[in-house]
Structure formats: C-alpha cells, structure tokens
Image 1 (cartoon, helix red, strand yellow):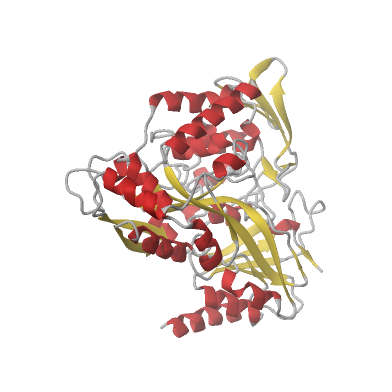
Image 2 (cartoon, one colour):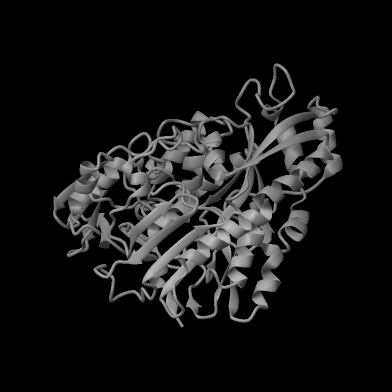
Length: 526
C-alpha cells in the first residue's frame, strides 16, 4: 500500500514536470494549505501558500525586519496617538485587473475582524478602519498601540468588488466544514497567480508579470508547482530523483543522505516556533480519560508530573537526530519576553513525577487520549509516540490518535480534545501574540486557540493592556509577570524549538526563513 501511494505521487509529479531549463519551481512540503481564504485560518503552511498570491500591507524579510508591501510607509498620527496612518502603494492591480485602493484595505480588515475569521485576535485593538482617500488608510485603536504593524504581516488584502461579485464576503467557516468560492480561488495582488488548485494534491501558480514589484524582486520562476507529500520517504525520493527541486520539510533521518547527494544542498536555521502539549484543566470531567467524576489535569501536581516525565534531550537525540532545542516555555528565543532562565525550567525527573502523582491521588495512574497531527510539524507523530512511552513510566496510559492537521486543529478550536499537540510560531516577535491566542480565556474574538480551559480575569486584563501600553519598561514587566503565571500554572508542556532544514537543487536560490515561509518572489535561479 505504501509503495502504491509513492508511485501515485511520483506519477503526479512526473506528469506536471516541464522540460529541462524551464523556470519552474517544483516545490514539496509535508502538508498543504488548509484553505485559500485569506482570513479563515491562522496556520503557517496556509499562510505560506497564500503569501505567493496575496499581499499584506507589511511583510518581514528573512532577517525578521519589516519590508514595505502594499503600504509604502506607516506611522502614528502626529495629532492623535490612537491613530496609525498607512500610505498605500499606487498603481497596483489585482490579478483580474481591478485597481487596488484604500477601500479594499478597509473591506479586508473589517472582514478579518468577523466571527469566523481566525485572524481577529490580531485586530482586537482596532476600533475603526477608514479610508482618508484612495491611497491613505487610518486605523483607530482603543489606546496607543506601539506594536500594531507587527500584527499585520499575515493579513492579506482582497479585492472588495471580486469578493462581493463571488458571494464570498463572509469568511469561510472552516471548523464548520464550509466551502466557499474563496476556499479554492484567488484574486490577489501577489507575485504569482493561481492556475489550478486541487487541495492536498497540487497547486499550480504562474508568475504575475504585471506585479507591482516585478522590477524589485528577482521573480526568477515563471511557474510554481506545489505538491504536498505527507510520507517522509516519498518526499525524499521525489527530491533525489529530480521530480522536485525544492523540499521544505527534509526528514531529519535523511539529512546526511540528501546533503551528500550531487546537485543538492541543505540549508538549516532555527525556526520561530515551539512544539508543546496542551492539557484541558478547565473541565470538571474529561471525555478522553478513564477517571470518573473528576479531571486529573485540573491538579497542578499532575500537570507538573507530566512535564517532568518528558525527556526532551532524548527526543532531541533519538527522534529529532539533534535537530531541535529543548524548550521550557512556549516562546521561541526570537520573541520579546523570552528568557534563557524560563526556557531552562523544564527538567526530567521520573521519581519526582511519580511522587507528585501519588500526592495528587493518582499513584496508580490513569489513561487518556493524546490528539496529535501527523502532517504538520517535523516528526510530529514520532514525538507523540515518544511521549506515550515516557508518560507510561509514571503510570499514565496514553492512547495516541494521530490524524491530518485539517482534522486535528478543529479539535482544539472547538474544545473537543483534552490532551493535544500544538506548535506555535510568533510572526509579531512579541509575547502578546502568544498570550492573545493561547493564554487569555477563550472568547469569540480572543483566546481562540486556548484549549486548556484556563481563565483568569486579572491576567486577561493585563494581557489586554499590552496593546496600548507605551511605557515599554512597564510593558515588559507585565509580560514577565504573565509568563510567570503561565510557567507556575504549567499551562502547557513545552517540548522543543524547531530547527528548519530546507533542501533544494544547487541552482535554486532560496534562503531559509525563520517563519518557514519561503517567498518565491525572492528566489533566484543560479
């Protein structure tokens, strides 16, 4: 069966391959975009695919620095600290030829603020978005927000007229299983246009020769063919055979083999992402355990014991082949608020963990289901399998359910999991982003990925205050205080910081991006 699947994927790749010398990037990764709707899902690979066809007002380069995109400059208003002014790029066209104006920005941001949008947390501080003229937008915030631009790098701009004409004004309800026109169709201003889309099979894009940045970026590839290949061995086989020339997810066990192959290079860099486990401590009783009438995860001693049972160094050496850094907090080192001291707080202590379990009344252990994706993070299912054995050492019998990310993520956002794996990148490079999604109590417009059930009104107020605190010393002190609560409550079980390994033909010029988001318009052909 596995061989047959490999053969099918190989046939698909071969069928789309162009003659030698054609400027085609044949790109593979472990997973696909969940949707093409720009505001439906806040997920890394989904953003990556959309970044090729849509533009944001602002993006980041591979160093993490801001780069002008549809906005040429931005600054707080000199007359009102609660207003940010964005001057827009003129002469930009959508793929269908429509003009890009401030009206499209106002429309897109208001759309992204609606209930079914997964991007709304990023815009919570904005109370009004207004077009001053065709190429000037003002964003009014509920207090001075010094970091607002950092929230905008994955917020894509849609063509208002096209969206209305195609009855896709409402953001796709992904968790509800809705499919809309915007799910598989694109009309952006980006460097590449959508040619065809077969979800989980193949996405084909062609160069937009009318792109506003045509003379600014290399845009060396006239065509992009993206093929998601979940099976690690199949991905490597496709790379070694030349069926693909860019692999975003190189299996760690194949790094030496790939790097030693003629015509291929591997590029490595730390990723702005942490992998961790979440635990539902808020429910009175759990669905996925064998304890009747109470919730073992509600006991801090149990949560700490579970963290102490995880041997992060073993996962690094055995599962990740050295390609990870053990984590003690769910913030990457890139992020404002990260400290080496907190990142070193996770320790392995089986005897201590057993003692905590006994003290909590679970000396004989219990069983629970662990929900895990199998196509999203590097060796995600293998990490979960390792955790099963480690937790077994302290009497916790873990039943692993590993499924594709498209089915896994709604379990978290819809509160249908008690124990789960999640990875979190921080495109704003600030702890507020983590707190808004993962620490604030779950409400309709904030805390939407907080599957822990943790809810602290005092902490929530402190989190909300971060958006308008212009006293940076006090703001950083508040961030540190929030982190202290997260750490002391063992809200999550941090596992490790991911390391990125991209492989490509030696004539492909792409540099590793810490967000794991290659921008193909920057790529060159050597």
